[in-house]
Length: 449
Ligand code: SF4
Ligand code: SF4
Image (cartoon, rainbow, N blue to C red):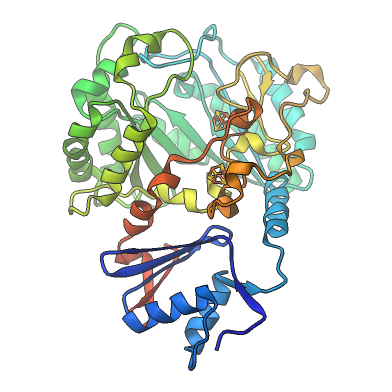
C-alpha cells in the first residue's frame, strides 16, 4: 500500500518508449532518470504515481521513488523548494567571469552580431579586472573564467597574463581556479592548446557548422577563405596527441534549413574522427538572428522553432552506431547546468576595454567599467522574480528550468523554454545503457559518468 502521507511530485515526467517506461523528475534532475522494462514494476510505478492501493509494494522500488523525488511527503511545498533552490543557485559558491581579452576576430562569420572595434585588453585594464574581482571572491570557493571574444586566442599572451594574476589572487583567497574558452578553433594548434592547458582551461567550445562546404560559407576568414580544414586538423591533433582526460571539447554545430538533410553525413564524419574519444561531444543549435545586419543574407535559410525541434528530435532518435555523444543537451535536465550565468547575482562579462555587462548578447550600454572602482549598475535581478508565470504553472520542467534559462529574454518580457523541452522524450530516450545501472531486474537507474 502506498503511504497515505506521500504524494506524487508535481515535477514528475513519465512516458513510454519502445517497451520501456521512462521517469524523470525535474527538481532532482538528471540523477532521477529511470528506465523500466519489467512489466510488473511498470504497473507498480503507475499505481504509486496515481496514488492507487498496492497490496505488496516492492520496498526497493518505493525507496527509489522517494530517493529520486517522485514520491514526496504530503505536506511538501514543492514550489517553495524550487524557490529556495533557485535562490541558492543565484548566489552559489562559484564566481563566473566571462572575459574578453580582445574584441578583434580573424573570422567574418555571416551570422555574427558583434560590432566592436578590435581592441586588445591593456595592462591597466588587466590590473583593474583583478581589483574588480577581489571583492567578488568573498564567500566563493571557485572562480571560473570563461574566455570569450572576438576570438580570444588572438590575445593568448593577454590570457596568460590575466590568468597568472587571477590565479595568484585565488591562491591568496584559497579559491579554486578553472577556465573554459569559446574559440573558433582556427588557432587551436597543439602548441596553443598546451599553453591554454597551463592556464587551467578545461572546457572548450569550438564551432564547426556541419559539412565543409557549409562551414566554409558561414565561418570564413576575413579574406573569405574557408576555415574547416584548419579547425578539423587542429581538433584531430588534439584528440591524437593529447593524453589525459582533464578537458572536454564540445563541437557546436550551428544549423540552417539545409542541415536537416546533411546532418547524418556531417555526424558520420565527426563520429569517424572523434567518436571514440570520450572528451569530445557535439551540440546542435539553430542559427538565429542574434542581431547585426549580416544575418539578413541568411534570413530565408533560418530554421523555424518547429524545424529546430524536428532536427534535434531526429538527431537524438538516431540510434545508429555512428552518432556523436550529445552530452550538453542532456545537461538541460539539470538546473545547475542549464541556467545562464547571466542570472547569477555577481557574475559579469568584462569587455576588452573594461566595460562591464551581464549577458554576451546584450552589449548595449555597459553597466560600468572595471576602472570605475565602484559597483556596476544593476542589470535585471532575477532573484526578485518570484511569481510563477502562467505558462509555467503546469510545466513539469519548472523544477529544472526555474526561469533561469535566459534572463535576457525575461528582461524583454519573453519566456525562453529550452528547445530540448519539446523533444524531451527523444532526449531521455537517447540515453543508452552506458548511462544506467541495473538496480532491480528490468529497472535501470541513471549513474553519473
Ligand atoms: S519557461 Fe518554459 S520550460 Fe521553463 S517552466 Fe516555463 S514553460 Fe516550462
Ligand atoms: S541571458 Fe540569454 S542571451 Fe544572454 S548570455 Fe544568457 S542565455 Fe545568452
